[in-house]
Amino acid sequence: MKFTLFAILFFISGTSIAQEFTLPELRFSYDSYEQGIDAQTMEIHHSKHHRGYVRKLNKAVSESKLEGKSLVDLLMYASYRSKAVRNNSGGHYNHTLFWEILSPKIKDSAPYPMTKDLENAINKYFGSLENLRKELSAAAATRFGSGWAWLFVTPNKELVVSSSPNQDNPIMDVSEVRGIPILGIDVWEHAYYLRYQNKRGDYLSAIWSLLDWSVISEKYTAALKDPLLIRIERENWPEMNTFHKVLAKTFHAAEKNDFKPIRLLSGDLYANAILLQDSDIPQSILKPKVASALIRLEKKCSMLHKQISKNAKNKSIMKSLSGVHDVFHEVQGLCHD
Ligand code: MN3
Image 1 (cartoon, rainbow, N blue to C red):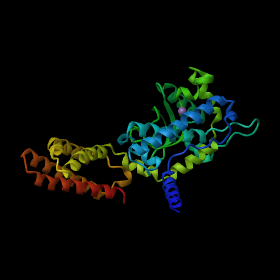
Image 2 (cartoon, rainbow, N blue to C red):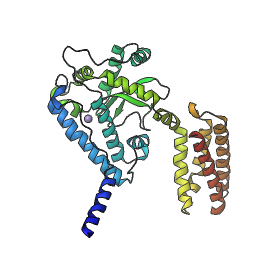
Image 3 (cartoon, rainbow, N blue to C red):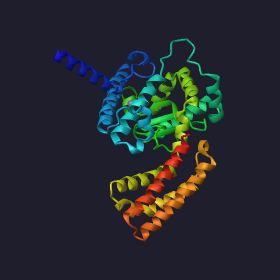
Image 4 (tube, rainbow, N blue to C red):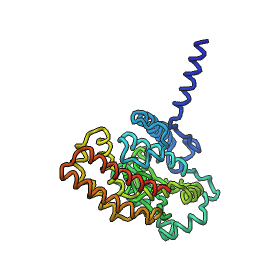
């Protein structure tokens, strides 16, 4: 009886752990992509490399106590994450997208058609599909070392080509221009070395012939409507992110009765409050309430800095710092209304 109870408890806790990331199946067999990529490369890439990213991601997430976070949340704040979380969350996301957009062509049948909307957008931003191919190939070919080439949708709903190092991608806060990828090309050597060796250009032509424009079109339509675009736009506010970092360092220490950080960094905090107040507020939260809260934030930081220059007591510093913290959260609240 006891044993059964233990077995049930074990089973229940076992299922709650099962919230882990898993390796997705490929849509076709490893040998279906032969026209562009050999079966052995597909198999090693999927069953060894991608599986490795998934395994290391689960390990890194558990070590960083980030269980339960979505993959997108891990990517969004990549700059705050450990190297292992950043590399392996990117590795998992990027490869999952990569497998989805590749389809072997069935001989003599029509290629996977593109929607009119995507075709119009490509013509608008690149002139033609051929120009997009050239831009993507150039981005992929000039990416030094390992990385990815991307076609993605920005918060302004533009289509942009970029490349990123390692397993980074445009969702990450480390990217200069951010957005939702709809097409990604793996330019790590493990993606092509067996058949193409050092000829990355030949590999890129092969990938081009495998692209499934129906799937990419679906991804384009979904990206345009995805609330993640608005999140990226609002959080793509470098001055806000820098201010937040300095505030977090000083406020949380002071809460634990350590006033060294704020005494050292009050000038920094004030300087960043000025930069924040002068910065371009993201379009979707551009409202008078936000602008006036930023002015108050700057005044409070100025006052706090003056107090510290006059060597004020911890108690009054805490009071002012809490005031800064409150206004900061007021701004954050206004940003998410
Ligand atoms: Mn790869």
